[in-house]
Image (cartoon, rainbow, N blue to C red; front, side, top):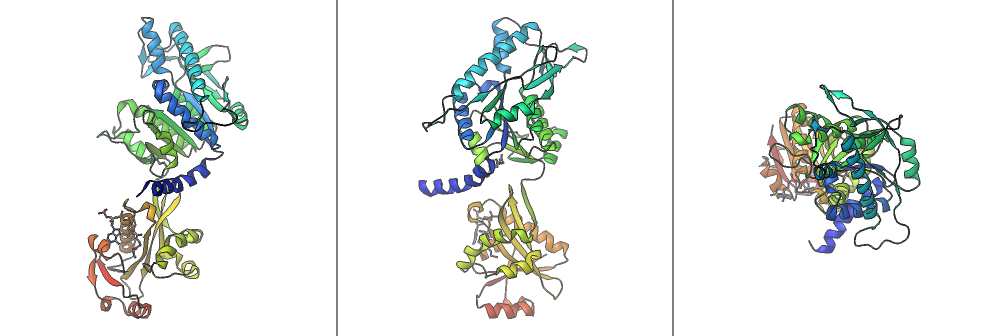
Length: 437
Ligand code: COA
Ligand code: ARG
């Protein structure tokens, strides 16, 4: 594939996501350790790019590593309980200093504009303010957590107003109480609470790791909330990622569409996560990402888009819209991230326990990813559930694919009589395959 072909393919893949994200609110929590040097510059450029596409951005920055560095310089040993920092008077001063410095650095980086694209016109406005009110975490297991706080309320109205004005809202991990005290909060708590309170489309965590890692240390690309809970319950997630994954689950359980976790160390991972089908890190959603379901009348235009080019090439038999309307109950479709990428039909013959797999298609841009096989497995399960003992498939171009998956060659005479007649009338001379169930 040459460069221009891959550009066209990539652009076509990204376009639906670009349209989808316009006007949507994303809450992005960024770990403090990523907020300097090259990582900050590239993240800031990508945030600018998102803002220029009309995405409403709420960015919550972390400050853990900066506070620890200030503590160290002052000879103060950081104290933790249950993974939360204990904030005494001195630590609170460090927390305020860290947030002040970070805010200045982030604002400066965001003022640089989009990477490799000289920005014309107005630069991105950044809004800050007292959006988060807090209260003390209190005494936990006999330990006074000091000025470590918990969130009391997120001022969604004020945030929405700033977003409506076209600003990026930047929130520091500090909150204020009604009595005028400042509390040290965690980036994750604020990002999660803000995403839920704003009913954001996505909660995104930009962290050091590439995503949620499984026991072998590989990134898990997609998780339903159920799978994510099982990972936590069965201790299949690294200790330092438990809170992150729990937060992802909380957000999607509270109607945030998706939580995505990705690395801020890899240039462009935010863009790859948002604008490609497979993303870059881990995506957590309430329900499964890839899904095969019974087709409905409203799917017919998508099915036609899938099958027409193959009909024109003679790979598939022509099926009119009227035919599809009358036989839609036979079709199953494969959805990935709400888009349709494949279909298959199961025809049941009148002569009882025999059926035919028909119209198996995976769209060209999604082929070779195992979807064909998923559709086949789904169809075999449905056929078994319907009591079918012999499953036929007729094909002019795809015989090898069926043979490699357990089908055997058969002859026209093996087909039920009504199908034999159709076979001869079509004149397509397809090869016949059979799968004993
Ligand atoms: N003959 C033999 N092998 C084929 C093939 C064909 N016509 N088309 C694809 N394959 C192979 C690929 O090379 C790949 O092999 P690899 O794993 O060794 O690299 C493998 O099948 C891919 O399998 P999978 O990812 O499960 O399938 P898919 O999602 O790419 O979908 C088809 C497979 C056949 C459904 C898809 O190629 C398609 O839509 N083809 C056009 C329509 C068609 O022929 N339908 C069948 C008529 S009913
Ligand atoms: N780009 C899509 C989105 O933003 C899909 C991302 C899939 N990500 C993943 N890690 N599997 O929702």
